[in-house]
Length: 325
Length: 262
Image (tube, rainbow over all chains, first blue to last red; front, side, top):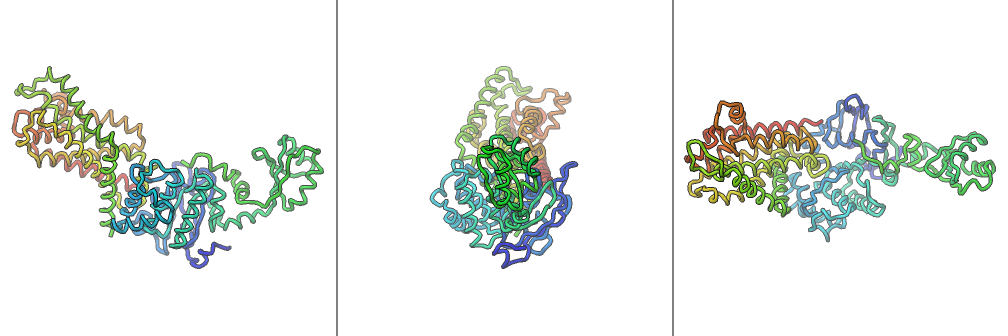
């Protein structure tokens, strides 16, 4: 199994979770989840709504109790509520935790002071992060009027100001447009280059998942496995053929009848998985009535396809739905 | 190390509440206008029919004034703790809860901040005390501020514990109108007890809020007929000790609730 380049130079796990279990009444939200996060890597937690990602996040952030299981941090058994563990933890919440009545500088200062930094150190690091994240010109503004993308960047700066060794993020870019998403990750990359930070995040976005060194998949509270994104994609090596047509159901039934292949209707397309897609396409075109297909496309499987196959849910579509309870 | 972090956490939270109060101009104006309006409207309404047994010369505006001071404390505590409900799930409080400060430091910081705001509001209203017949030179200032500080800590601690336990804004509103507001009404703030042995009299005697009203009244009108106007007033030392005990109890319960993760 390969891991990201930064992970390879420090292969020991910084965080190890074993047998983590959490119930809500009769429902088992996490069922004996075990995994390890290597020092310096970006580790993504991927799973459909209600899979247990947010529960896992809240337990690791110390906001929720686990009913069973252990956590080891930097090789030592760790109680998640210990101050010694928490000073090394940075957290970015999905819902945001900045104070809109305060300026960006004041938000950073408060964030730093919570970790015992002197006012002088807090302001010095705050200025540096504002500069690094391209927010310095607007540091004196109250953030209530800021755009979502800028607030997320400030949220990230606030989580990093006490120089944590591990950063925990819950769907940090949910709702951001493409440009804001890219800038968030660019700034995170710059911060990581400086400190060798380890990142553990939950995500719904396939473009975000692809930026992770390794991805752990969780479904219905159970751990499915953990691989680099490319390994997940090649684990299901079939090509993906998508057909655009007016008569979705009729064509799907015809494919089953004439070629004996199971196709699936997704949105306004028909989708087929096949080990040799390029050989399937001429057969499809011959078998179907002329003019029935508007377009035929062939591509290698993406993370989204893998996710769909494993969980039956569209990764990016899922992200637009409401979060877990 | 951890004590320094606790201190830092409490300080950040308390300072933030005070800064936020002054940033929201409408809150500053409301904080001053609301008690004045209340004092003036109810004072004019009840003033004509109010006769204090054994001290008929005490005007209602004088009787009611300490009651309005404690109302300022109560409303400030309610306002501060209602934000805890939302702040805890999607707001600033999340980042404090994942920080290294202990649960007690989170509760203490929030309650100190809210008490500081309450004290500022109460002090502004106290500027009107001469209009209620208070002689500024006679006021027992240590008793007054001791009572204000301990009462605010108690009320904020109580509000915090309730907010954390109820965890929904609508539920908190219900508790506010069924528990907190009646507690103030039955504290001797609005009317005295004519028959201490009646059901109402007993209820008022059991009400912890009466110690706040009694102590403020005794500090503003020391020794005069108004100082035992409620008819059930405790000694100032008893009031202060009780309020201090209640503050410690409610802050402790709040810290325990916060520490006991779901």
